[in-house]
Length: 300
Figure 1 (tube, rainbow, N blue to C red):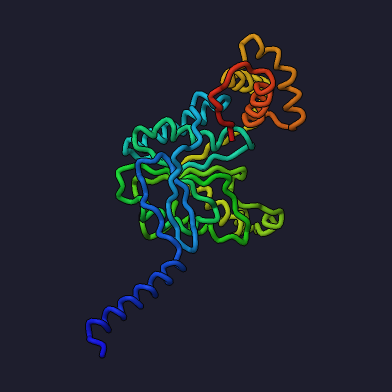
Figure 2: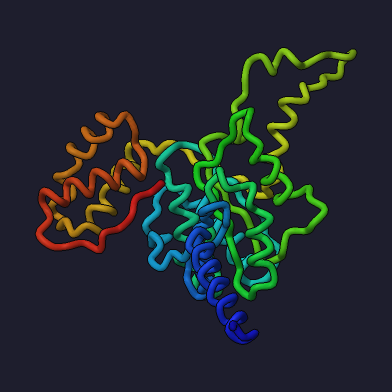
């Protein structure tokens, strides 16, 4: 005859086996956030979002960025205000590809990490999770930049509404230890069509733009600081090539000889940009360099 004790032991054994099987079907718990890390990525696995630690982010120095001195000055000033606990603006960096937009944000992290700055990279497909991220970092002593690279939206995407709420428009205030830095090739972040100009109507001497255009412009207007990047001229491009050649260990007397190849490289790529200059220097140094470099990163 079974005793109550034996029945309880059998029940708990069955329950333990059951919960082990259920646990095997569940996604693992996200790791604890190590806030000492310099950077993070927001990830979503099995429907659960978490901050993934980036132990060794792409390191680039402010001194490595050439031809964008005014943009660099303004972003550094804004970031310095932010890490010092003073008021600062969300930043939208727009313009020509390969001119240093995302590299400038990464360089700001490298410059101010020691003062408590942290970077959280968020893909545009995860923008709906912004309220979760805000809740995670609110109240932390560190200063966080939410970084959205190559940001743009199509007319059918809804992520821009979450972004608008975080920037300016939600009933919940954004914590003072968080800013948003975004890069884009589009000034207004969404495509604009000729048809939208036809929505303009005239009442007397007054012009009323179509509401569709107003909706698109309103998103970029929520960024307090706009930084525009422009294609480099030939002199700027060659100066950047020379900088990266030095960083890759090419002797000074060989840099001048590389000029014709640098120009030919830009013609083949139909572009003169910091990224193209870095790619040329990397190729040239690989064929000619006599010592290892520090493996610098490209402008983007």
